[in-house]
Length: 374
Ligand SMILES: Nc1ncnc2c1ncn2[C@@H]1O[C@H](COP(=O)(O)OP(=O)(O)OP(=O)(O)O)[C@@H](O)[C@H]1O
Ligand SMILES: [Mg+2]
Image: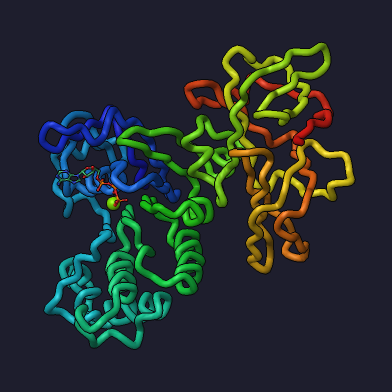
């Protein structure tokens, strides 16, 4: 059992406050991901849990026991560092065996564990090499292996896949997902990569400038982001945001003016129109139609990106306003082609002037009526 609780954590480096009032519960036997832009404090937060850094104020509990004065070695956790931190004079095998020898495992036990883990990580043929004889991606996998063989209560991973090439990264992600299911241990995983966050996490913590923006399971963050920062960070390609220049309040519909000759008529109820400032819609929640059909918006195809399984189409709605729409890979679009766009009304997001989501206030009638872009 290893639930981790962070209470009112602040961290200063010198006079700079890099973590502000962090309150967070990391559930037992679940994988929690810290995600956020570079410098937002992900590694610092992980290092505080590991005991390699100390909070300036606040407390860290593992299973209700305060860890503030407990040294790293006594916290029963293993950490994979962003910088690998392998022992340069030891072979891969010795690097992996080191922690096990300290905790008095016998030789055959150590050998069995290392063989098992090194196969999973595709480093079984590298066991006699020293770290400097390995590529960055191979060193990173040794660092993961060193943590896995130790079997602690808590695993802390700091961007463990960041130096691995794209193909192996997808494989390793699947392996980590399997390990997570097999090991049933508390894991904290730092990444920049929102796909990794979405696919591995039970719980995602989105950080920005040392503050928590939102905590939730992947689909909650995707479907109900609490603000524009989270809406923008989760989901790939990113959500489209359209500023509302003016709202025409009518009896049945409200007309959201997005630009010159560009508006969407939408039937919204209970929404705080005074504060409505922007709408957000993800590329996968729009459909491209023939320009001859009636549609919510219309525009001109600008750039087409064929990925094979799907196609991303950048469509100009009016001067300075464009949206990215996901279409099936089988569809062919030509640059400069005139198209219509339909919006999935259930997936519209609404933001106020401060960028906070006001979705919860909104409820929709069945149809969005046709808007125009000329
Ligand atoms: N030992 C230190 N001394 C001073 N400032 C530090 C120290 N360690 C980190 N920082 C600063 O604290 C902030 C958070 O750093 P941290 O390494 O936690 O970011 P991160 O989210 O892990 O970034 P990245 O994604 O680039 O690894 C940054 O502004 C960084 O410059
Ligand atoms: Mg980091």
